[in-house]
Length: 417
Ligand SMILES: [Zn+2]
Image (cartoon, rainbow, N blue to C red):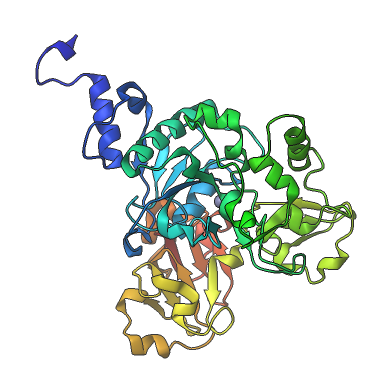
């Protein structure tokens, strides 16, 4: 065995070392065999370097992506929406450096602490809140959690799921700020799964509801998250997991099924007559007929790939947030000029005309002309779904929707950063 020769690492220790380097640990953690199984690779979001460093790390928040491997990773990278993504084969992708802030929690509160993004690590597990994880995901997540717990000294009761910490402000269904905005990661509250993940305890109750800061808008979710295991929990869980769990009834509203994704373009309402409408196209929420099926996490239409100045916001900052001056934020003026966020001065931003389209997380590959084909501009990526073609008339197509020999001259090509 070459391990007996000094100075020559064994395969296992090399894998272990790779795992340690990948996580950025300074010292060798205990549990070497398990560590060897953890495979982390970098797929850093273009937003990573703009994200501020976190001052504290008091929580780890677990999510389910509600989608498949490819689309989940692309979406999470694009928005910098988690630190780690656990793929279905157990491999782990790092999307945001663990010292920085990832935007994974949204409107959130736990025990009076708000904006959990500032004090937590976010892990997205590819899959659905009401379906089992793969065995490899459980193994990888167990090891990832073990390492993070030892780095940050986070206790098991502070390994939470997104549905525990998310809350909603009052809306048409609820008169008070309330818990129950998300079902994300709900299964990570189950004691059996927690035990398999090496988590020996879970929170016993919702501290913000107990303190009166929030009301409980969903007794069934509460039972799943905090209730005793047994019949009651199974009955409650069946409301989320049964074959009709995504069908609207008198008591199961659009909000109950879709939570804060109810009005999003990625949520599709399929009416009893077979017609469909996306969340942002529904005008009257009191008239959704019983029997309407709600499909979550659908690929959003291509129109959501960009935002428009004067329609979605009035300043670059309003539209692009802290990424407004990033190299991967592109401004396409109505006259077709493409400007990069990092090349503009403050006064230039103020001069952008209404109708300017803002693309986040893209590089400009160039303009198609007689002498320059899409392939010459961006290579094999020309066919990617994430490559966008801005046609001279204003229409936009993806790489999956075009034929290279039919792209008109003057078309602008944007590739995902
Ligand atoms: Zn989530």
